[in-house]
Length: 192
Image 1 (cartoon, helix red, strand yellow):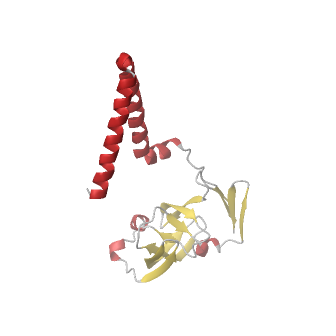
Image 2: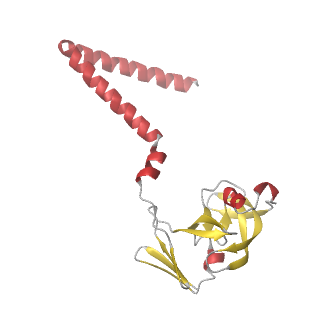
Image 3: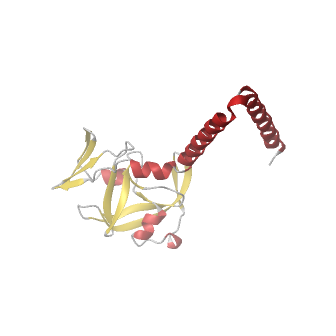
């Protein structure tokens, strides 16, 4: 603990002691009632701290899951997710992989975990290529996917992200295979 942290802690302890002392002097005749209220506020504080600490778990449990995409004929309808993005699960080498549609990404980029799921082991890849992202430059490894999507796209070029990434990205190299990309009424429609 630095001297700055120690000074701040000392200040807070003195301030807290002064507040508790003032409350005790003001409510000498009602000590029992004050202790009940203090306990209630303490429990509220602990509950708020616990909720903040578990927010990610609570959020994923409480928020509704996005509806699945629908493939009909030569089109895919992708509903907008709860987070405002379009999420699409495509079979890659026969394995369902969740993607976030990213028109700002020029290519299809797999997370290392997704790459391993489809048989491309990150420890065997050569991360020599570079990509510029909103978070700076990252290392990438070029790969070839045997198959991707419901329309039988074969021998598809993609990249594996060398850094941390939450979900794989479905970029323009896949979207440009469609003759029409339309966004309306809370859904994205991709037409071949």
